[in-house]
Length: 124
Image 1: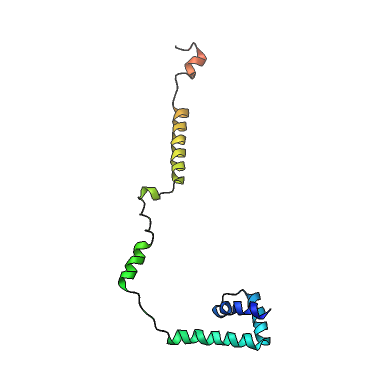
Image 2: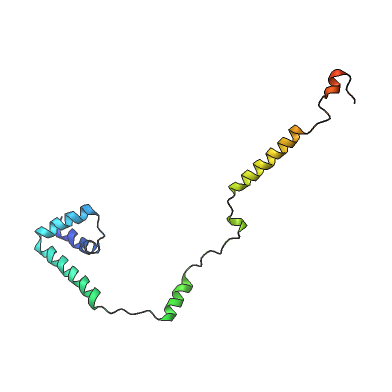
């Protein structure tokens, strides 16, 4: 790895954003290059200093309101019946079909021959 490439990756290494292979290659380069190692150490000192000495400011309340107003609204809750899974309709349709089939096959029909038709003439 060259110094130009390693300088571009120092911040990513400090933030833990590099994949394992690239981080390992960069660490090998830092072990052999005092200039890049010094730059990396300076970056780590800067990060530590920022964490301990930097002031934190709270955003004013009106800014919070503006940000919340700019965010997209959450979707409206759906009606209770709309939340039911539509696959249950299949069971209802199958039940209705089964009931209709059972009624149509077990109900006597005047077109079917009866016992009296077998032994004699069928009434019309």
